[in-house]
Length: 432
Image 1 (spheres, helix red, strand yellow):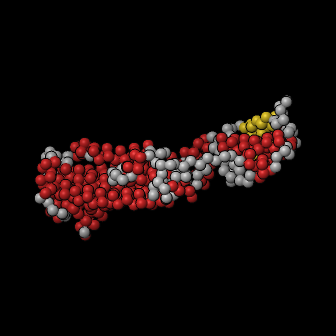
Image 2: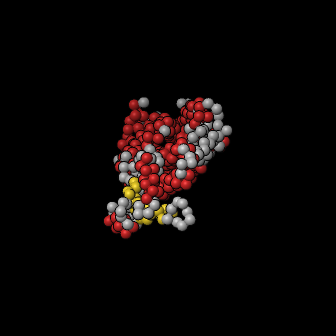
Image 3: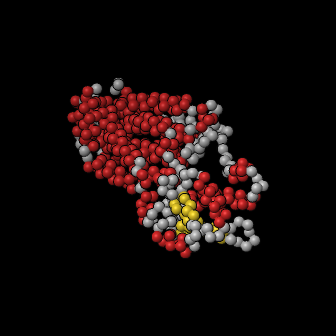
């Protein structure tokens, strides 16, 4: 155990100090930072916040031309004020004519102005919104809803009560519920779809799990193959047991991957907490507080177990290859398994109740990503999550035992890759 700890520490320090690790980490951290701040950069290039929508703390100022249709304009202002926190703020023009309001737009006093044009033969005026820049669709939708409510008030006058008017203007919300979902815990979760912020979190976790597993797995295989091809393995095998070597390298590189994920997580969290990014999330009706903590917790657990499952297979394959040039072809089957797991989850993220995803949740090679989609959507009962974890843990023990026997045999076999028959005979002679 002490020797395995030494190998773990040596592998971790050796990989962290490499230029490839430092450059990759810095470049990916910069790309993440740029990607998360793209909306803010677009806003800066557009010359302000008018094109990107505004939050409640920085509303878009819209003037209202009141020289005509004063009664309608006042009703609109009263309705908008009663809504509380709005993305826009109406500023009554008073005695200002249209030319004065245009001047205010040019000076930046207001972002645009609303003109209520009288139409002959119609009781309600035609609203036209003028602005020097594009007003965001969210603000236009809010203004249309306010105008619709005022129009109803103007047309029906005193025929309806305030309660009846409110009932008519309240939009109908349709709730969808799947009949295919199991009763009990999953039934309650099926009444709501995955929230946008949780959708993004699950999507990022799937990509992270796939890329991290592939990077660290290939790192393990290439290091073992490199040691074997340079004959260093013959020296190591005399001082450290093959089992300690294999798991020492796996744990050491796992710590490297975990460190990299921690750095990326800190970069993402730091960028999301910036004021301008919080405002963007608010415009998209997303909040960090809506993130399902279970997705993060289970995502970390399944990442760790999924990593060890693939890592022991990469180590076994690496031990069977004598030259690094042959490694890419040798690890192709494992890469294909990982790709299948990735694509099943990505293409099913919008339909978490399909049969394929349910079956994949209990197959150890695909369960780390498949069950994560169902957890994010709230359609995976606790017993299914625990069963998936148990199957994955047992699979790690089985494949770990098998990989240890292959590693012990493969590291001392040079030349062409051994056949399954040769490998099986050599494995029978070795007892763990």
